Every structure is written in C-alpha cells, then in structure tokens.
Image: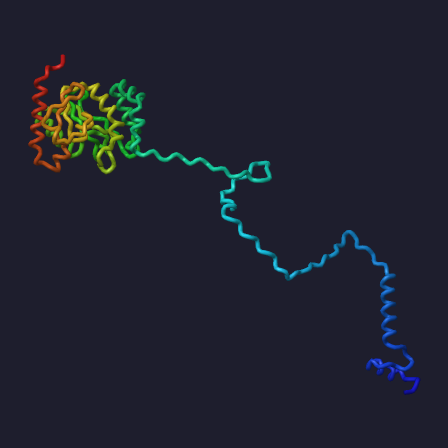
Length: 313
C-alpha cells in the first residue's frame, strides 16, 4: 500500500476501523483523547448554585416490600367513643367522659307517692268547697290529669242529707265536666225520684275518681289513692245522714275492703259513723235491667235507715 493516501482513502479506512498507514494505533489515540477530556473537565470551574435555585434530589425506588403492621390484640384496642368538643385554648380535645344515665321513668303504679304526701292531705282537709273545687280542676296527682278533658267535682245540693258515690266519670261527664249526665245519670235521677228525692234539693252526687280513666277502664290503685282525699273532704263538708255506694269500686274505695259486691249488698256498713248502703251502679243496670229489683230493695233499706235517724238539730 503506498505511503501516501488520498483523503478519500484515509476516510474509507477510518470508517472500516482499519489502521491507516502513518497514523498512531487507535488505542493510543483513544487514551490520549480520554485524558485530554478529563483534564479539561477537571480544570473547568463549575459555579455553585444560587439560593434561588433548587437542586433536585433523585428519588430512589426500591422493590423491597414494606412489612405489613402486626394486628393489635383485642384487649389492647381502644374502644370507639364520640369525640368530645375541644376545650377553647387547648391544642388537643379533652378525653370523652361518660355521661350519667337518665333516671328511669316512674311507672304509673308509683303515682300515689305524691298523692299520699302528708302535706297534701293536710292541705286538702282544710279547704272549703270553692278552694277544693279549684284544686280538683287543676289536679295532676296521677296520670289521669294528663288525659282528661274536664275534672268532674260533683253535682247536687252541698247541703243535702244524702250522698250517692259512683266510680268515675264517663265520656259524657268528661266532655261536659258534670257528674252523672249520661244515660246512667238519667237512670239515677229516676231512682232518686222513686225514693221521693231530687239531686237539686236532697242529694249530692260524687265519684271516687274525679277524672275519667281512658276507654272507661277500671280505676287503678294509685288513682284511687290520689283522689280519695278529695272525696273524704267532700264527705266532711257534707256530713250526710246516709251514703249510698253505687257499684263495687265505690263500695271498696269507701270501706277500704276487697270484699266482693255480692257480699257487701244486703248489709249496713259504716263510714266514719255514717250508715252506708251498697248497691249496683246505674251503668250496670243498663246492661242488666233484671237486677233493678235488687237495687230497689237496697234503696228501701236506705230509706228505712234514714227514717230511723233523728233529724239534725
């Protein structure tokens, strides 16, 4: 190969990575180039980054999985509470505190606790007719005060010699606020007429309860205890010569007995020294008219007792 090559031949040999005659070996040339570039880089001054520039930090990702947290035992777990409102000025909310449970509702069977208070009974025993009537009309000594429409104080002549006591007001009495104004009241007026009496002149009519029980159910014990002081004060003001108890609840409430009505009829009882006769309630007679004969026998017995008494001076 000639010692002198043209430029085209020299470029062709360099493309084929073949040695070119007269040129140094390629290894020596590459080493010199590397040293020259490294020295240039070493001698080059790199300015420091300014305060406004941020140097990015490369994020290194790893393929090693993170360990899963171990489960907390049940006895070490914290129960879930409602978070309390933070206290003003504190950085952390105050720990929740257990609020006291509300007191259980008082059942209706305990309503007589207020009714039999000595102070209340003492006060009732000092009232006159007007104040007693006002107290009954606003009474809430038992739950019936919340369900009634009107309290029924009584009807008739407060100076009469006869007292007829029933069980409790009915629907018509509750609506009008008057005693014995329904069908049972009309039958009672007929009974008085047969005896030669009238409610306006000779008799006074009252009930054990002053308020109607819902759906005309039987009176409950606490309700009777709550209302009895009213009736006792009415009797003390009336001072009747004879008392006629109309029905089982009236008789048992006045006599404080649980004796059946069948055993109370036909006898003469006493209420604080006042003769007391027991008979059927007029409402019972509306359902069982066959027992009107028995009622008439009881009323004749009451008339006989009345006639034997000396008239008041």
